[in-house]
Image (cartoon, rainbow, N blue to C red; front, side, top):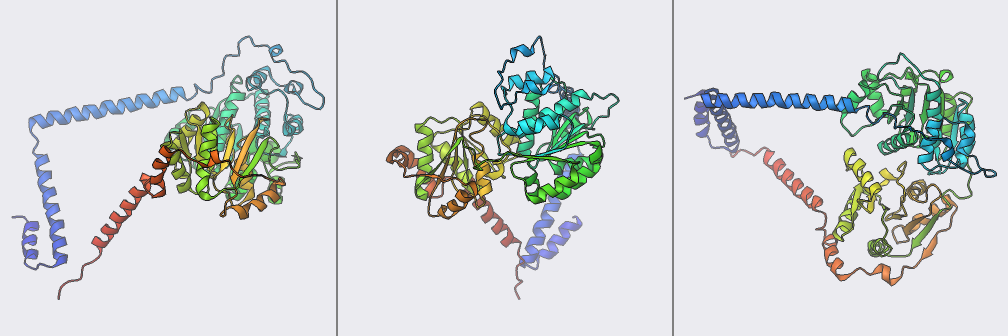
Length: 527
């Protein structure tokens, strides 16, 4: 008899609750010892089985090594310049217009012009017309314009031109020549995509760095690339810099996009560390862009830039004139019906619905899916890889509706968004401006819909005052308020709280955890 079994017999004599717990633990340990003994006495057949397992493990390791090598081979595939072919600038005919600046007038490289031609850009937008003639000379600039007016293309064209004109030899891997800083992952992904489209024939390597995806994979990509353009969020960039994976000492041009958002999100201390690791402002070109520039941002710009030229495109209205802004006078119960009927009756193929809370947009996503409409979700609960897939599905038409929190309100550019619905209004009018800025971009028409309900009505005057635009108030027609009977039956489960399975699952989990905690509480011994 083992020592543990003897202790077990002695404790059994005093049948207290505490002793019962100790007996259970001892029984587990005895069972573990017996299984260990059984595993040590391995039969010849089991030995062969173990050998087969180990050989499988070796082959799996070899496969993972092969996949890593294949990944490293493919790292530079997307950075290879597309075939320029026999393209001639004469294929890109744009007639001169008074007061309009053509890209032809800027003396850009034919390789860059072909990318611009395929992006279907013809004339510079107002902010591009002001900034490009100066930034192409190498001057530091700061620019303010409404969202969707071409700020990204302005700094990308400057950046490609500078890097192509100043080719370098003797370069080190993980040492970018141009650095673009953005506050959110979504904006980083969008800037990288725009850069690949505009510069597809330029032969420059582009790398993005942001959190929420495989850390080691991103690290390997950096270590195996001669990076020309790096697009990054501050947190992950600092992490790689501190590890010595990234070296910012050779940065020739620094771009800070959505500078006001950087300030709001508390990234300024991180930005100061990043800028101190780059060459001094006298040895680099710095460009700073945002939809809004306040005094705090201009003060920082003065510290980070050298004799900057500041440009603003003033507008009578903060929101785009291309966006029709409608306010439906409705109750909270009618909001879903109005959105559903507008989408289904008008056969809309690409819309965004904004809500204030994660649970709100998750519930809306389930409701639209239950009604047979393809819908995606974008919120803080969604993983980064899933966010990227969802945005791609919206772009390629796999889904018609995107339900999102304000995580998607800035920097996301998806062509052809016809309608933006505000299921609930944000507290800050500036967030409203960025939400509706997802539609009516690049000269296209768009529609923004809000609801003048009891809950949100007090926010509308603030929005009208901030945007300097009077909303168009409409009483919804009966056809927009009524939902078919068959769908009403489906939607009843959401009214009763049974719609979102996840919430029920979480409730069960909480109950289980409560039981576990109560079981762990010390039991009073009987006297």
